[in-house]
Structure formats: C-alpha cells, structure tokens
Length: 200
Image 1 (cartoon, one colour):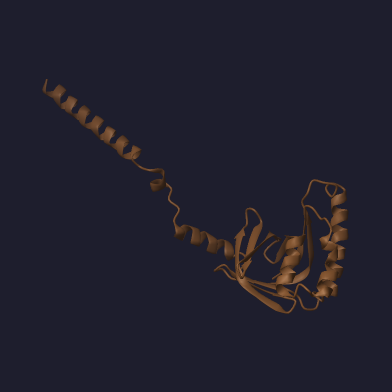
Image 2 (cartoon, helix red, strand yellow; image 1 turned 120 degrees about the horizontal axis):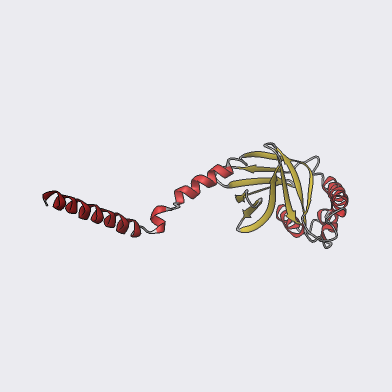
C-alpha cells in the first residue's frame, strides 16, 4: 500500500508538471518566438549594401527586354541589338563615352551620381531578390532594375520615361541636344528597360 501511494504521488506530480509546461508554451505569443527587430533589419540592409559599395563607372549602354509580346522569342535578341545600337549612338552624341557617368554607393544607403557634369547626391534602397533599386534625390523617388554580373559588373536599367527623368534631373529639361539624342525613347517601348552597364 505504501509503494502504491508513493507511485500515485509521483504520477500526480508528473502530470502537473506536464500540464504546467503545456500551459506556459500555449501562453507564448508568436512574436515572442519570432521577433524581427530594427537592429536585425539594419544589420541585413548593411550586409546587402556592402555588395554594392564602391564606385561604378559607365562602360556602355544596357538594354533589357522582359515582355511577352512581339519582342519576345526569336525577335527579342534582334530588338535588343537594334535598340542597344540606337542607345549607344545617343550616349555617344551626349559624350557619355568621354565623360563617363559614375555611380558611387555607400553601405549606409547613401549614393551619388556624376552625370552630364552634374552631381546628384541622395539615398538608395536595394532589393537583390527582386533585382530592384530605388533612388531618392531631393525627395524624388526613381526606381530601376539592377542586375549583377559577377562582382565587377552591374546592369542598371530604367523604364524609358524614368531614364529621361534621370537625365532631366542632371541637366536642364530645355537642353535640346539631350532631348534630341534621346527622342527615340519617347516612342512606345513597352516592357523595355534601358540604361547603363557599369564596371567597378
């Protein structure tokens, strides 16, 4: 009888411990288990920005065709080649092959661009999984596609109207030579991104 009472007490004690453990785990909120702090986000952002850190210099035009229209399939490389040639000629007439644009990225999220003799200083936010970068100068946001090609090469491309906006930020909108050189971009280029190939 004495052994039975001892066994019964032990069983009751184990049951109460298990119940207490279950209750405490049930009381845990999800955000107590998986908490993302501002420090976590800042650390991850710094890690991402370090992959861009440094000065990148223009080495040629870049064109990206992403649509599933007539430019896709067999016509896609032909369209890219023709558009890249037009873009190269336009950039050459603007002397970008001589006064090469430069993009400088810092790991703290600030950046500067030397373009057409002007320097634009601002900030950027880069999302590598979406290949998207958003610049901000004087409160004006400008998004682009950024594709890495190894550690020493970037392809930075914009929608045609946004590339024109970038040039207008760096020079006077009334600059007829710039507008004339890029006038073909005012045509309807759906699903086409144009911009710069950059090297470190």
